[in-house]
Image 1 (cartoon, rainbow, N blue to C red):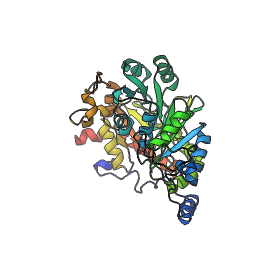
Image 2 (image 1 turned 180 degrees about the horizontal axis):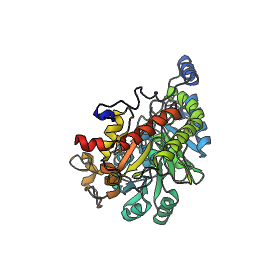
Image 3 (image 1 turned 90 degrees about the horizontal axis):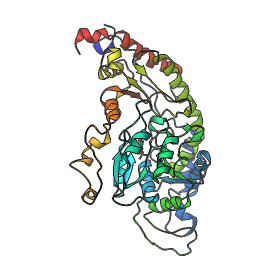
Image 4 (image 1 turned 45 degrees about the vertical axis):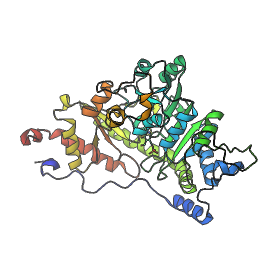
Length: 420
Ligand SMILES: Cc1ncc(COP(=O)(O)O)c(C=O)c1O
């Protein structure tokens, strides 16, 4: 036997190096904050304290400069930034927001958190992002906004999404949680909609432990987001008195100085990290796209941030199932996963555990199996993914990934013999 799954030698014995990389710069920046004693510095008083401490403002200024927006507002996660964005763009209870079902849960639950209704549009089968034609088909008189997700770091088809949004009076929140540093036709993600949100949770390309950012050029969106993250308080720089004036619902969504200090250093390293990710991905793509039945697609007008490397697997061409393939790769010592996430609309929260707002909802959002066939097919049969093609791994490590894929396919006959 050759395959490790059936007792053969493993392609790779040692584990892949750890992510994220924490350098001396990050350690010093965090120590400096600890020594300063200012761990948060968001105060209820008037003036700049409402906007956060020194490191928060440095991280926000640098991030806004990097992305190219007037404002960047930090949050304690991308999920809270999404919630802030849904509030700030003016969605009202009972209105609909179109989202893809192939994404992290909070892309859709951020809508529910504001008593609005997620409506799911299908994704494209090549880049796995929301399909602009499906968005168009889901628009109703209640639709207020759309949230395209730049899934795995590949930007969604923004030209077409912006066109559909403009023609139908919809707002756009770009979910760039997985796409720090990605570009679409030369434009940074996050600047093509009304606002964009990013994640700095520890697996992401910028890793601060937890953390998020909302970027926008719109002053009103920026100010509302600042209030949402600060318990709904309306203390702005222009106000003189110390007061707890709460005019609408807000939450404790503030980032700490420690995370901001990490973010400042990690942002400096983003371009270099993304370059390594792109080189590793190109190295793997060149070899595995030659296999009939495996396809990784990156449009030539985007810069992918390769948070995740994903491809489609056609079992009718390869001769074993996607799940057998992934099991065999894992046995070879290569961490791959199948399917990504179950289409979100199949979760209990859209069925037996529906939130209260649905009692008042007048629209026709459907959450039945079959509404997004491309997503369902990717989840059930076709999508294969890994997070390991990122620094500090080298081309030599990536070569193990390619060799393992080739080995499993060359020895697929062993599945037939073993009847697994
Ligand atoms: C597409 C997408 N949106 C939103 C989020 C939420 O990010 P966070 O964990 O920072 O709340 C994630 C997290 O993985 C994500 O992948």
